[in-house]
Image (cartoon, rainbow, N blue to C red; front, side, top):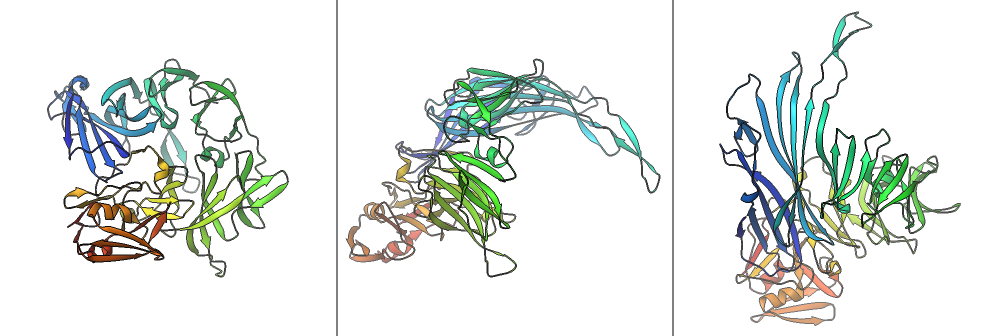
Length: 549
């Protein structure tokens, strides 16, 4: 195993970690070498670090007779067939933080196939072979393990045609009959990362086995069948109205894997034990969808010509959303205390019902009351990729039809309404990452932090990292900024003063641009450091490092 490290070492602490896999081979080589890139951002300083690990001792062979042609393609060494055989390879990477620690997973797939011309309009894959390999990288030990290998084939059946007659013209047309590939072998199916599980299917035995990802131990076997169901018992499953289940925990979703076997439904618990569960029967004429949280029932129902989010207690109905708001999405905090309702708000005074606001309605489930309504950025953009970074920090990506590169991921602290935006994605964008923090309550935002350096040294953040606010300005804790540049800080009624080398910068705490969280004030730093006689240097709006001189 070889290792290369880029950037200087930093003391390990709270981090944002991304683990990415590549499978590489030099041109002309018949071997593929696993490569792992570990990118970390220290939340205490914003410093970036990259480590690259080459696992040459775990190199594996290409299919017989192939050699690497490019980064992701191989070619036949000797053309012994008129049919060109194509080989392509790639992998999907995942980063997970659980009770087992931070781990990276990769599902590699090397595909070889022929392009077969069927007729003058159609070319199809023939003799397709999928060679899959599932890997685990342990962030703590930097060890790479091969969990499972699978090989499956897809063959074309005989292609047949039927002739159909046009009713009007009476002309006959040739039409390809329905067909499907003939499958054989084994395959690695879905990875259920939240549940520490993965699927392994065998066409010969017509079964799917579930294994633990972290321990690679066998859990259970599920036969192929028409009734077969393997999915996660999540909120979306209930909202779709197809499969919603009730456990003993007074909640109808929990992200556990559910499956059907022998006409019965089962749930795999966090310790990977299995118990039978019941499917909920709803009167869908009364609800568009319905969920249970803390023994309270919530759903969406049409009342007086408008769709409302409601809670029900027996025959009593309580409207949570309001008329002239369209519920885009609903999510529940990990501790089951709050409903977060994404809404598009109409202008009720205008007959064309144009959207005026995107907003987030926060509802306390136990107190049964709306906590606050938060105005969101990016009008006319529904949320996607919604995740909870903590019990009170919600992250989502606005769904942009155009110019998506300029649309930033948004973090919302639901109890204070603080909104922050992630950095533009030109630099260090990692699609899959994990937050590894000792105490999530120290943070009201988990966007990628900026690195602020003074005289070549990084400023240390005591709790919340530096970030870009909703207004696009760079923020930092006033206390951390003062400590980092050696300024005197003085708190006065309604204001904070920083003094450096005889110059003073005053921050009005009533200014709308100032953010206060847990007794700490955060403010845009550019005007402050300029007033203190320092230079503020940032290469461009994509740069993650800011230098104060």
